Length: 455
Image (cartoon, rainbow, N blue to C red; front, top):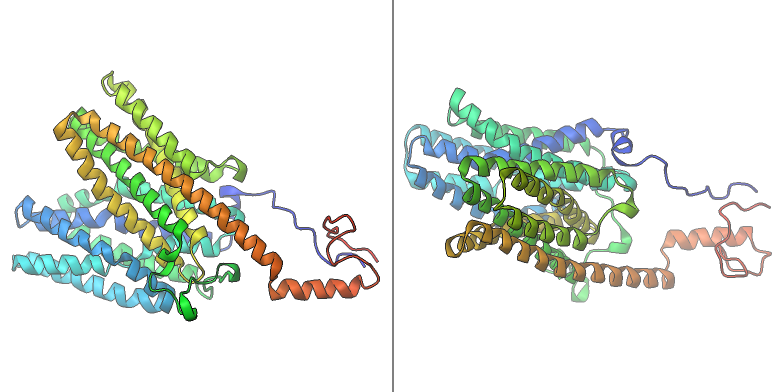
C-alpha cells in the first residue's frame, strides 16, 4: 500500500515571493497599510487641528492628555479576543468617529478647552485597534514559512507611515484645512477596519491546543491574561528597553546636529529600519538573528554613533543608517516572539501589551535622553541609549532561556499525552502494521518509520 502518508517536505518557495502568491494578499496588504497610516497621522493631526485656534502649548498638552488613552490598548485587545473582531471594531470605530467629530466642531466654534481635552482623550481611548489586528491577521492568514516575512512587511509599512504620515498632515493643513488631517486619519481607521474584516471573512483565529489559554486555580482564566507567563513579562521588559533606547537616540540627534539636520538624521534612521526590516523578512530561518543578538548590535552601533558624532556629517549619516538597520528587525522579532508566546485566545491582547510596553519605553527614553542632554551633552543621550539596549540584551537572554524551557516542557508533555488526532493516527497505523513487533511509527532501532509504507 503506497502513500499512507505523504512526504512532508518544506516548500522551496519562501519569503516575499511566497507571501505575495497567497490568496487575498492584496486585500491584507491594503488593510495593513491603512492601519499604519492611522498611527502615523493622529497625533500630528490633533496637534495641528488644536494649534490652529489655540496656543501651541495648549495643543501640545491636548496631545499629551490624549496619549494617556493608550493605556486602554490591552483592554481593547482583550475585547477582540473575547467577542471577535467584527463585534468590537464597529462600535469602537463609531465612538472614535463621533469623538473626532465633536472635537472638530468644538474647535471650529472655538468652544471650551475642556471639551477639547475630553473629546481628544475619548478619541484615543476608542482608537480602533487596527494596528494590532493587522499583526494578528498576518499570523492567522499567512503560511507558517511566510509569517516572518509578513511581520517584516508590517514593520516596514509602520516605518513608511511615520515618514509620510506627518508630511501628509502638514500638506492637508496648508492646502485644505487644519481639521483635514483628523478627517483623513479617521477615514484611514474606517478603511482599515473594512479591509481587515474583509481579508479575514470566514476565517476565525486558529486555536492551538498545545498553547491552551493560561488559567488559574479551578480552570478559570487568570485575571492577568497572558501576563501570567513569565517569558512574556520578560519580553515586555525587552520591548520597553528597546523603545527607550530608540527614542533616546531620536531626541539626541536634533540636539547634536540642529533641528533641520536632526530631522533629516531621524529620517535616515527610518530608512535604515526599512532596509533592515526588508532584509530580515527575506532571510531563511537559520540566518535570522535572534532578539538578544539584535539588541547587542543596537548597543554597539549606538556606541559607534556616539563616537562618530563629533566627526564630519557624512560619518554621522552613516552611523544613523547603521543604527537603523537594527531597528526594523528588532520590531519584527518582538512582535514575532509575542505571537509565539501568546496563549490560545489571547493573541490580540498579547500584541496590545507589546505595543503598550513600546509606548512606555518611548516615554522613559525621552525622559532619560533629555536628562542626559541637560546634564552632560547631546551625544550623552546616545550613550544612554547604548546602556538601555545592552540592558535589553540581558533581558532578551532570559526570554530565550524561558522559551527553550517552555518548549522542552511542552515536548515532554506531548510525548506523555499525545493529542487525540495523533492517537487516532497511531491506531490506524497499528491496524496496518498489526503483524509487526514494533510500536507504530518506530523501527526496531528506535528511529522513525519512513513516511511511505509499502505492503
